[in-house]
Structure formats: structure tokens, C-alpha cells
Image (cartoon, rainbow, N blue to C red; front, side):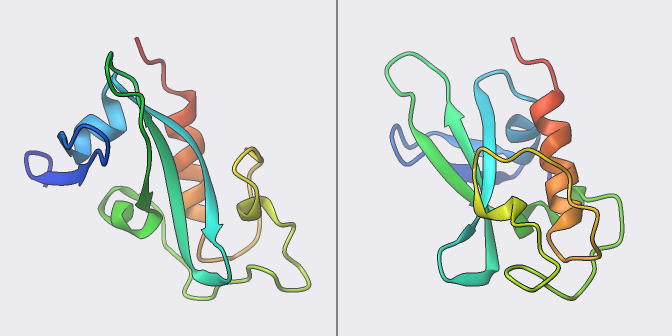
Length: 118
């Protein structure tokens, strides 16, 4: 999977491998949020940081399943009574402590955000 096309920049049409998204210096993670009105879709947002592009694009969080190193709970708690709403704001970078389907993705994204990028 590391050498295969994983996502395409909608601005410049450049294809990225999963490893380039995860470790690359020219793709910067921004945050995550639920697809509006659909708690089944969670999106990761990225900036393509190269001259002549700078496009912001999304990748479905579940595309990163092969890289999540913990069990993914089947139940989505988004918008439920115990949900703290972390996935509803792209700026929110707090960890989710609940057994929600999206909590492992959130932890994965926070690891991506913490990686130094040149």
C-alpha cells in the first residue's frame, strides 16, 4: 500500500502515496471533522504545501484503517448524549476518551499533527 496511489490533490492533480501523506514534508495535516449531517463519514483535512498549489483537501478518515494500530470500535457516538463534540470542529485537537468509532482516528491524527515536518 505504501507505494500505491492513495490520494490526489484536487488543485494540482498530483497523486500521493499513503506514506507521503503520513510522513511527507509537503502535505500538512490540519484537523478532522464529521461530514455535515452524516456521523458515518469523518474527514481528515490536509494542506498541500508546495509553491504554485497550497490546496486544502480532504481524505476520508477510514482510508487510514491500515495504519490505525488499535481496535476500532464499531459504534459511533457522535452527536450522542456522551459526545464531547471533538469531531465537529476542525480546530479541536483534544483527544476523545470514549469508545467511539472515531476516537482511534482522532488519536492517529493527533500523532500526525505532532510529527515534525520540514
